Amino acid sequence: GAVVSQHPSWVICKSGTSVKIECRSLDFQATTMFWYRQFPKQSLMLMATSNEGSKATYEQGVEKDKFLINHASLTLSTLTVTSAHPEDSSFYICSVRAGGAPQNEQFFGPGTRLTVL
Amino acid sequence: RKEVEQDPGPFNVPEGATVAFNCTYSNSASQSFFWYRQDCRKEPKLLMSVYSSGNEDGRFTAQLNRASQYISLLIRDSKLSDSATYLCVVRRNFNKFYFGSGTKLNVKP
Image (cartoon, rainbow over all chains, first blue to last red):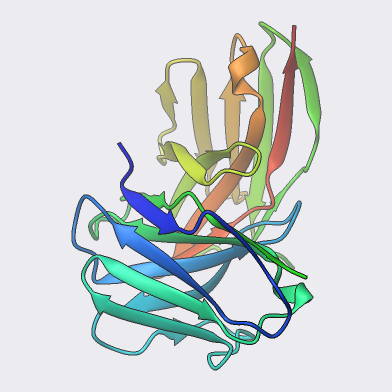
């Protein structure tokens, strides 16, 4: 069964609106979750690391005020795309890493496809 | 230079064929290596981890060459269901995962 869920699976919105995406870890508590973005025919790019109870860590070039991350519980992280514009249209995927051993894999959510008109 | 580079393909092969993908990584400090499979418009799913001694899982064989900084994936007896994009992933530092842009495989009847 699914380890990570995301909601919504797709969203279409007008330019200037804000969109919230939820990521839930279903099988275990996750102090850390990850948010990725994938443009067509490109690789997944890590946007930020979401830390439960503290501030997210953003990758270089990712605007923290535009992509708000809240990790309020051990099973839920949210990504809010504020004042979305067409260039923010992308596939947003969250993931949870199982355990801390080096070979522990990441489990990905099913992704949220955002289209900004 | 990209952290992880892959030939985007597509690789078009008939059913039953053997196909191999390579992937190179730029940072010698990379610590863990994976192959993920991604179907169109879906999330990536782990195919297999790659161990230093090489490892096999059914029709899939992965190898790692640290000296040359490349990883390979061999698929034997290709099935139609193997059609997907294969992502090479490396981990450096505790939580930094770097993804290749993927190699597309089309297995045809």
